[in-house]
Structures are given as structure tokens and as C-alpha cells.
Length: 461
Image 1 (cartoon, rainbow, N blue to C red):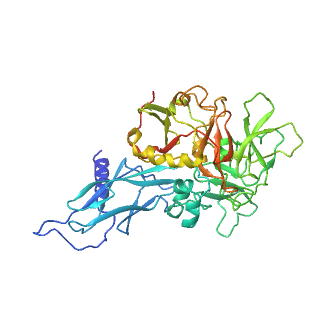
Image 2 (cartoon, rainbow, N blue to C red; image 1 turned 90 degrees about the horizontal axis):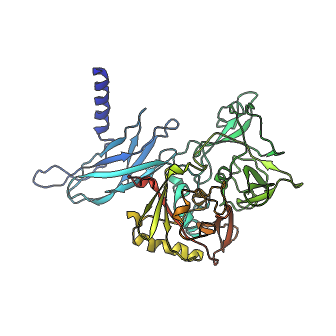
Image 3 (tube, rainbow, N blue to C red; image 1 turned 180 degrees about the vertical axis):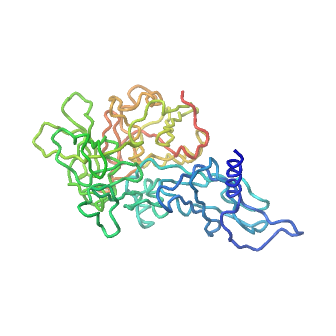
């Protein structure tokens, strides 16, 4: 017991030590007073997913400071920036590099004047659960043209992400050999093995590299490929997670990793309208439109097998919590770490008005938050539950939607359609179809923010 206590004390002592020496500045504070200090806490920093990936890099006035995790993760990780700092010095803390699989943000005391020591700096990190849309940019002009989708999410952080593998924008994929080994740097596999699979390091899913003919049955549960069994047809949520909707041409997927024909790919889900013989598909030849497709026709049916579980699919109703905040409801999805703002009364708007409405919403700080935004197409899809129809929405979500029939309508996303910038992506919650609509058309509004930056989750109602 004494040995364990000494070990715990030693660990606490380690974290009390300044994490990086440097950041030289002139000493201030006349009269022999000690210079001010800058310290605080990091919350939620996860252990490394692979060597050298469990590292958060912050900067103070442009000088980099490194925070790394050992083999365990304390609930709160103290951080002290080494000085000396000067009295009256202006400071600003920013995230330079996110740890793999996480997004971090400075949420408290991130900038100001050091008239006295600052000890309440707060950095919060959360594990990303959703792939982004790929509707991003590599230049300021492209980011501006594809806003507001391009200004949030993993794509917006692309230059600051630590990835386990590689991939376009915010995507993070690894190539896997049929033997289960990683494809090496030269593109090779062990003798007798071939590159057959792709691991999504964000969602945790394992995909076959190429699509297969689909005659209505999935592989046998014992079929072992890439050291994985229980291969199956994906859900619509899972298929949509690998759509690269920002590509200029078909197929709308990261072609450095997937060998997919420019065609519709089948999901495991049946479309819940009057027809009993239509299945959900995602069209990778048409930017990832999702809808019904007959399984009785003569067209070539294709599927992309997947293995594993993820946080993409519909959670139990207990995952949602709802609270009345006056003119709106807030709704929390604890599984995908999102918080929703559902206006009780809102007139349909065109897309430009929907984008402009965000500023006026945040001016009133509903729920005490002022970082609400329009959801991108991936985020909006998380509200769809295709096990239901009219509306295709989880029963725990529906009570937050005001008025009869207002759940079974079209909602705007923040994502523009790359193929025609006069159109943007929408979801019709009658059945859950994902498609595009002219920006001049009318649709309803809903807002989202990252729940992780709300340290006190709302209780379910």
C-alpha cells in the first residue's frame, strides 16, 4: 500500500512540473515582486492511439508548448507554462496540434493581460466521432467559397490534426493487408498477402477496399479477411461517413484508399415507405445522395462490406437529454458529443437567410452558449433514424420539434453542393433522404454545437 501511495504521489509531482521550459521574456514586476505565472488544466486528453500520437501542442504568443500523456490519463491534467512572464504582458494560448482522434479547444482564460498570475486556463479535448464532409479547402479562397461547412469540424482543423494514417482533409485512413498487417511505407504486404482493407481511424470501422457484387446476402460470419470476421453490409450512416462530398468528380470517396465503382452502393436497411422491396443506397457517382433503390431490377447491385461497431449508428433514446431554454429546446446526443438547438417557432428560410440567422441566434446565447452553427450534412444525418418514418427520427428527439408535421420536413445543412454552388445539401426527415436543393428554396432550421465544450451535461427529461 505504501508503494502504491508513493507511486501516486510521484505521478502527481510529475504533472506539477512545468511541461516545457522556454518562452523567454523580460522579467517584470518592479520592487522585487515575483513575475506572474500562467497555468491551468487540460481536460479529456486521451492516451495515445499509436506511438507519438497522444500529444497536444499548444502555443503561447507563438512559442510552442507540448502536453503529452503517459500510460494512464488523469481526470484533470495540470499544466504550467514556464516563464518568466512580465507584469502587464499580453498573452494568447492557441492549439497548434491536436492529438490523434481528438479535437481540443481553449475554453477559458485563453488570452488577456498578465497583471497578476493566471491559474484558470482551461483546455478541453474530446474524441471525434464523425468524419467530416470533405467540403473544405486548401486555400483561404476555397475555404471562403465553401463556407460555412469548411469553417468547422475535422476538415477545418486539417493542418493541425495528428493522424494515425493519412487521408484527404479530415479523413484518417490506414491501408490493411489481408494478413491484418499495415501496408508498409513502400506499399507492400507480407509475402502472400495483399492490400484488401481500409481502417477508418476516426470511426473505428474496417472496410473492404473494393466493392463487391451484392446478390442479397452478406459474407459468412466466419469469413476471415484482414484478420476480421463478421463482415456485413453497412448502415446508411456508415456509408455516408466515407462520402467525400468535396471531390470535383466521381467517385465521391477518397480514391487513394478505396477502389469503388461510380455507382450506388447498397446498405443493410430497407426503405420504410409503402414499397416492401426497396433498399437504402448511397450514390457515390452523385456526391453521396442517399435514397431508395429497387432490389428487384436488373441493375448491377454492389456493396462495400464493413466490419466492427462505431458510434455512428442510432443510439438508444437514453443517449438524448432535452431541456427547455425559453424560445428553444436544447437536445444533447451524448453518444456523438453533439448539442442541438431546436427553435420552438421558426419560419422556413432560404439557405442564405439560414446562414445569416446564426449570428442573431448566438447574440442571445440560448442555453448560455454562443457558438451555435448550422450543422453540416454529416452532423445533420446523425438526427436521422431510418428505423422510423414520418418522421425518420428517434422518438426521444421528436418531442423537441414543435408543431404537427414539422419533423417530417426538409432541413438545411451548412454544406454547399460542389457540383452546383446554387444548391446546398438538405435532409428530408420524412424518410431520411439526403439530397440537394436550390438555395433559393425554403427549408427549416436547426442548430448544433460541440457538446464537449459544455462541461456539465444536461440531464435527460
